[in-house]
Length: 281
Image (cartoon, rainbow, N blue to C red; front, side, top):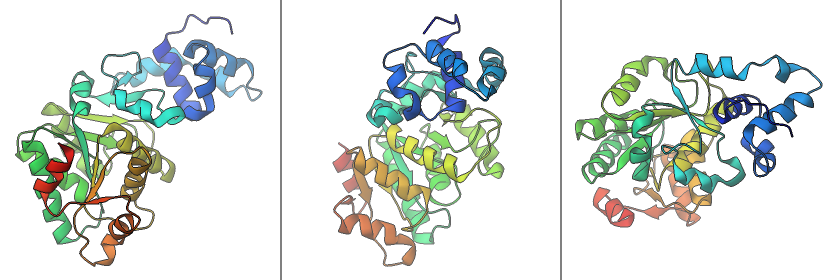
C-alpha cells in the first residue's frame, strides 16, 4: 500500500463515512489509515470512493465539531474494549474536556416515554452521581436521559451526551438548547456521525453501543424489553463486563426489560442511589 500523504485524521474520517469499523479493523492493524483509504479507492469498482474528497470533507465538517481519533490525548481509552467495533473516530463538541469527562462516566438511561416514578428515579440517581464526582452520560432523548442531564447540571456537574446523528443539530431537534447548555457548561457532546447525518434505526443502535463503551457502568432506570436503545446499551455493557445497575422493577410493563436482566443475572439490583454509589466505588 503506497503512502498517500493524507493525514490520519482525514483518512479515518473518510473511512468512517464509508465503512463500519469491523470492516477495516484487520487492515488498520497492519497499515496506516491513509493507506487503507487509498487501497479502498483503488479497489472500488463503483468509483464512489474516488469521488470523495477526504481533506475537503473533513475541513468543512470541522467548522461544526472536532473529529477526535485514537492518537489524540482526548481519546477515551475505554473504547478499546469494543474490539474490532472500536470507532475510527468521534465527532465531538467540547473535545477539550473529553478525556476528563469519560474517566468517571456513568450512563443513566431508560425509556423515552417514561413513567413518573422513572423520572423521579432518574433525577435522584443522576443527582447522587454528580455530587459524588461521576460524569452523568446519556442521550438527549425525552424521558429518563434528558432528565438525568438536567439533574446533574442542577448539581453543578458537567455531563456527556451521545447523539445518534451529526452534531449540526440536536436529537430530538427541540433539545437544541439542552445540547448547547451541556457544551456551554464544560460538558461534551459526541457522535459517530459527521454533521448532516440524519437519525435512523442504524445510527440509534450504533450510538447505544457507543454509550456502553464510553462509560464504566450503566444505570438502567426503566426500560421496555423491546427495540429501545436503552436496552441495547445495557446489553452491550453486560457483554463488555461493565456493571449494569437497576432499581427495583415496579411491575409496570414499561420496566419489563429491567426485570428480564435481573432474572438473567445480567444486572445488579440497587434499591437506591446510595447502593449504586457503593457498587461503583
